[in-house]
Length: 601
Image (cartoon, rainbow, N blue to C red; front, side):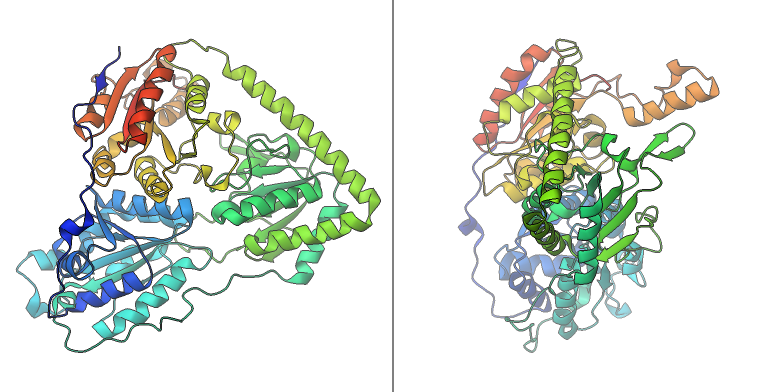
């Protein structure tokens, strides 16, 4: 069955001058916050409306001439996720504005994910007047908390509530610097509603225009880095694990130089795209190179354990695949981001050498040390060349195996994941494309050519995060007119279908291809494991997991939100033509969704 939906194409965006107004004679305290948003060049503000920041809202729209651009979202989680996606895509911060205590609580999960994903989100909040005489009956009381920042203090880098308008500039500047200092993360600034709404009776001094906004990067100890180079040069089978180095696009290229200088396979965990997918030394998605490793080098990698262990999920038994004699080097921020509440810091890596440093600086320095050794040591040079050739041979064999596996069940219905990944790749490979979050169970990483650092902002996070983050990624690339693709799980979209409207409203063209298996299948698999372990009926594992009866019609849903929508499509032969039609719509400025029905795995 196939349906096309295109009744409400997106109209042209209104001209900015339509909303231009002459400045008012009076100035208000909330104007100072707008001055700071301008001074720190924060271009967009995603929000869900609320009366607690009505003063700031008016100042942005009128005094600030709608700069930062206000982006209306239907839920506070979406607002934070858009800012999260924008930040992780290009490394620049974005504002999310939340309505007092209740808006903050709505956004809690999105803030937590931004924190563990190191996304610099500048969260602006508000609270009912702390002056009890200015509170409106009931509503300002139930929306006001003592120490409102306490609600998210365990997973923001800093929160602050200035008590006078003169305290706003300094705290704003500090918050920005804290947010942008590596490892980055969200900050939360709370502005009293009554403080915002008061007339400004005097000039408030802003931070000096020439002041440094963010401290310099953290450089490595030269002696420690020299020792790391010695350990790499002495190793027969070194392996690199990287997770967040790609947060700086410069490091995407410098990591290639390091790997080539040492002939070292690279396992990219993919919190940010850190290494080209088709490079001969790319050893991602396989644990083979760890089995005989004598040195593991972790570069800004928190999740070192998952790629180096094998898990029996049912019994939670964990076994390392790395020989016990292997040495470990860790270069990164160590426990600088350690939280005493959330355990995102994961298991301790008892490394033989730990170097505290920003990998953006450390990687080129380490490469320089290895290149110097290559230049003067012929035996080392020969060993590096031979090792690189061996790794490349394994990489090529692995890619050939994946290509063959992708052809299995090629014409099956529902559509196999590798077939869908192949069809999308064939449709976009000639474009300047970007993949947002989901990787289609890693089939895109197996089949696509991720050749530039901006091609992918990094792996998806938990359910109910992908669509909002994808909107932010698409916003970040909108001016470059890149074709942004979101391989969108059905369960995730159902959490916040209203986010589709955000793309249409704010003219964010993107292509959504539904990974629609009509289930929350990740949990379904866990129930299958439990059934097999306990001897309960596997046939009942779907209860509470399937998304059928009724089947959501995502094509019509998208159409109702101003998108081009098409589907459901369960015949793989029809996908290519549907993608061609949808991409034409996206290029014309309209977001488009293709609903494809896929196999569970």
